[in-house]
Image (cartoon, rainbow, N blue to C red; front, side, top):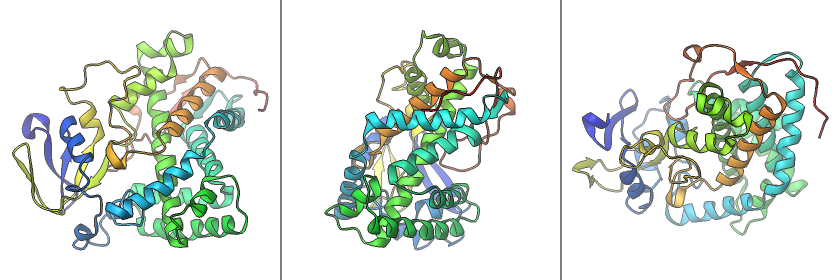
Length: 373
């Protein structure tokens, strides 16, 4: 793509749905930091998009910061940022450790496990439930809905499932407030109504589980398959964060996202971007732009894995902490873990936005259960 088109690539998000994919780092920064020319509100674009378009459930307008511009964006962003700022990062270490140990104890005596379905997914699911103060029963329904939406399969049904389950959570927290992000959203001066609350929670679930899960798994895959890490992290010469930082650069959990829709035809690098047509940032493409990627990743935060500008991820500190602690807990408990199949037999899930394995099977010497935390 870079050889043929340069920094801006004409693509189709689905058959008959044109867009521009940005794979140039500096061009992406220009767009991400210019919300006046590149607003995130898709409502004009989506008028001409068929209801059964597989990417519509991800990109269509909702009353959230991700899909809004101007004063609307500021209102939702401030409420979400305040709700997440109340997360106790010190207490989160203990929360992740408790959940991780309980999960490890379910498979440590078996000698094998799928790290997605039996560890990373239930861990991130439980952590987000804890942050939002959500019961496991409601959370399970939310997670099933999220999977349907991200896969583009029965996506409209997934949205309906989201709405019903999260409406119950909002009602629960109005009646029984707690020290959680949902209650902080309800109490914020933005005075979000019930439907706005449902959409904020859906966004927090989708943004909290899927990318964090992918970050954990993609980092574990690097650790288990790259000689620079395979002995280093477990042996102590490298830190988990070294692997995390490299994955955030080279294989970020959201490969392509941060959509915007130019208000008018806009010229960048001798390419006209059509008005109201999606401009999608390829975090993977931009991070690997030869103009910026020099192969040095440790403590390098210049990647775009979290986005940039006014729409940058407000939960990056929480996500990084959860991923690092989840990996550390696993490797501390099972230091001799190994990939169970050759890497070329691993399957990546379909979809234009995420970078996610379908499974990550591993083996290890059978181990006794850990002491509960």
